Amino acid sequence: MGNKITAMAAVLAMSFVALGASAQEAPKADGAAKVGIVDIEKAIRATSAGQKMTKDLQGEFDKKKNEFTKREGDLKKMFEDLEKKKSLLTDEAREKKAIEIQQERMKFQQEVAESQQAIQKKERDMLEPIAKKMETVIDKLAKSGGYTAILDRRAILWGAKTADLTDTVVKEFEKSK
Image (cartoon, rainbow, N blue to C red; front, side, top):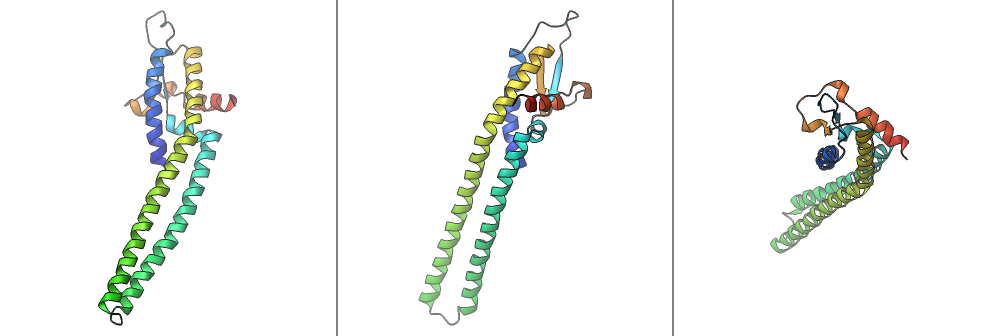
């Protein structure tokens, strides 16, 4: 699930890099640019909305995982039963049972794939309002702080700890409920 948040954070990072250009204030008198850094993924996970989203998705994931683990065990048992009884069955009966098991396995795989897609869609739907709010918070912070750009942590190789605005962004996000 962390990879899903990472993927959405990458999309956000690109919009925040663009945000840096739109949130420009006049450069400092000495011409130096003021740049901030935000770990978007960490910021999302740190907010109460991000934590609730993660908890809800993990609960749904765990429920489906338990359901699918049981179904997988049932399929394995069906196959083992066929192996045990295959010498007692006619070729026709054995083939029929093997086809039935294969159809059940394909149906199971389809349900797993559909479940994964449904959880991913739910995550996108839940993440969208958090991302929009995060973008608004960063935009305000950029303008009020006179930043030339605010970059995602993953978009840079190194940045001074003093440039890290992640905790500030989380605090502002929580204030702006």
